[in-house]
Length: 302
Image 1 (cartoon, one colour):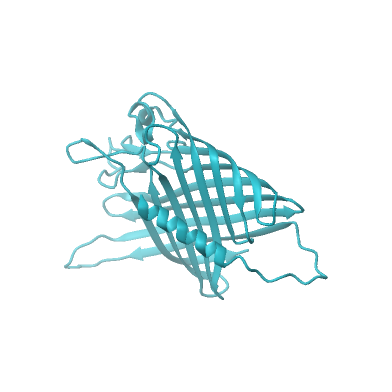
Image 2 (cartoon, rainbow, N blue to C red):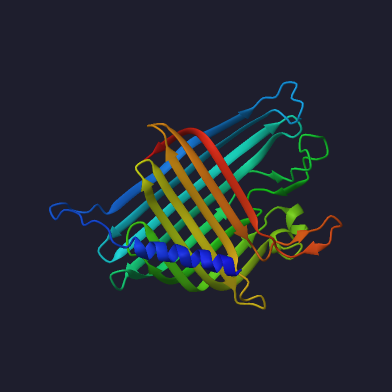
């Protein structure tokens, strides 16, 4: 897990370097609320005719929204964020199979006790919209539709935390919490009976108490390039203390014109409770999960 701690340290350093911001004109009164976001639809298509090297025709799409509503007035701040992403891919073999599925809602309320530090309370919910299948099983074949490996609220993650929040500017924040409750929900009976996502077989909820660090960073890299990233680190106060769960999201949007853009999104996940199995069905340790989506399509910034 050392490389994840190194990445976290680098992100913190970037936030400190960007702490200096331009002062607003004295005659202007800063607005209490600030709304930002980007939404769009990406499309991709492949068509093969008598292609000797092999392959399949495919069509892919994904619809996304990354929005924030932040409040700051006097000693109080309130940050809210909504991140959704859903997409499917069509191939001759698997027909329509989802390729990306995410629903993340977070809110953080804080009261400043110094220029850059505040005492804050955080709530974060993470889940998905639809069933997910192993790509090796065709869900369109009779008998395979029940072989899903995830669905809405299976898993679902709810994190509640109280701690100190470092916010040198509107672009960067780092919250450190020694008192964090993390609950993993698996409300689907089939998956809970199998003990999926770390729950005890037959149980629907896994509750953990631990320490949390959450870093949020956004930056305008160039006139038409914007970066938004979020890194979450969590370790529970149990026999596995020190094993860090990692969730790192990043999106870079390249704006081509008013409505057309290219987006690169990545998601790196490591969850110590999610064990993998080998080809013989033997349980192995947790593995790093990584997803990358590069798309071209319509986008709207606000």
